[in-house]
Image (cartoon, rainbow, N blue to C red; front, top):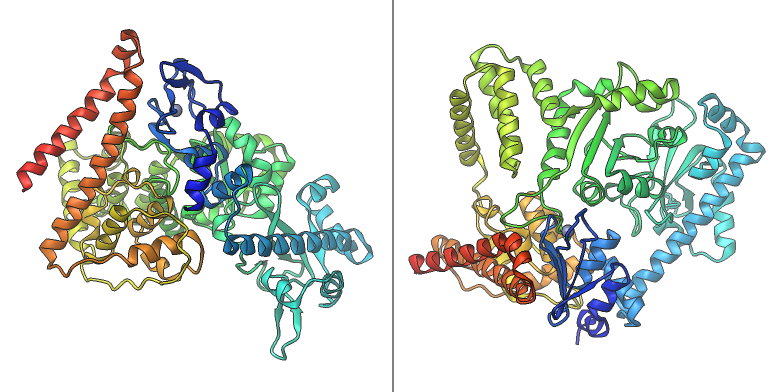
Length: 603
Ligand SMILES: [Zn+2]
């Protein structure tokens, strides 16, 4: 008995969903207006017999109670597991409990440290810092709301305080508050700095950003080291304050620095978060994608014209085009992925959003309203950098932009970019199409073919239920040298185990080396399971054949699952409903039929 099945046994999906959505009976099933997208006629269904749900409308998403919790609460799988375990009274195994206890300890140390930093700021030693903040036009309300503080320079008081409360040396180190110096003594990480607590969505302090108050001192900003509860690449600064507005407005503005975000909130722009770095990471993008469809990235003017920025934006773009790991947003094979609309807002020369907002809200509004679509921005930046007038630079520009154009899954959106590029470089459409085809060929032949050994950590208590077919598929995918050829075929939605989706996406993002670094948790369990799959020795063509078949079996399984849900639903519907919805069922049937004939041809 696994914990997942334990939990599922204790939950009735209809009852569970009804707590969030008003369900209406439809034959043996239940329907409602989809809670995840706006609609007038219900396309959200719950199937009591299968204990699954599906939105047949814009989301084209579905799953079990875990997926429902993940989607409603914007949770990753482990969080959903935790919440459902709590709600059902299922006790998670010791490993997880231990992890929970550690993270509770670290959170409480961070909270105590935060309080201490605030006290220090408001006390006599913080006087000059308060002056600095007031010079920067940061008022008391903002200090309180963002929990700003000051770390004393004495390397002693905070440590002493935390130890007196009963925390151990090792916990202070794990929390990233202290480290051991060369002589083995505890030494405080943050000294004499303005402290900015970095909070999780629920408001818990995960770590700190710390700004130097002496402009000659480096680094200007120092962050908490990575800890079990703090990973800079996974957090958006300000999300605790911005979350609700972002969801409500369906729009988010991403700035780079803490002060930019703080300033924006101070002036009432409450949908602003900071990326705490120049390029958005996959994890950050995933969070953004489930919250909002309109994304504005605010760039400092100095950064805007630089090669590095273009590279960063290029990588952020690709991350946005990727399917969301462990959370399917709107991926249906008949429907293109609906990706956010990303725009770039450029600050005036020498200024960052903090400066602009501080000077004039109207100007900020104007800059944000006039933000340029990301594609045009990238195109023009590249054009400015490398030229766009002679045939050679035109070709180069097409080659640089081709991967971006190809990564867009929506054909209409893609066509729009082609048209923008055509006008920009002023060539005939047929010429541009030929250049794009050339670029694509070059891209394919350039991709690395050398086989890389993937070492996979082996360990872990196998509490994640894995799926042999998915694991087999992933194992071969890790082995073959021409992985990229399968990225289109192996769709995320075919995989049912959330960790397998994560593994698949890491492979697709060329980040599979990260699999060797996973140290604990569900992904490790999945990786160990994948690694434990026995694959008979095969030559390259056989491997490719086996992989193709495995992917196809996954697809068949996926389609049949949709089909059975569709049948369940239509068996209860009136003809009127049937008419309007019959298109999707026909498409599923066609696709299944197509796969069957393809099977016959291949055998
Ligand atoms: Zn929906």
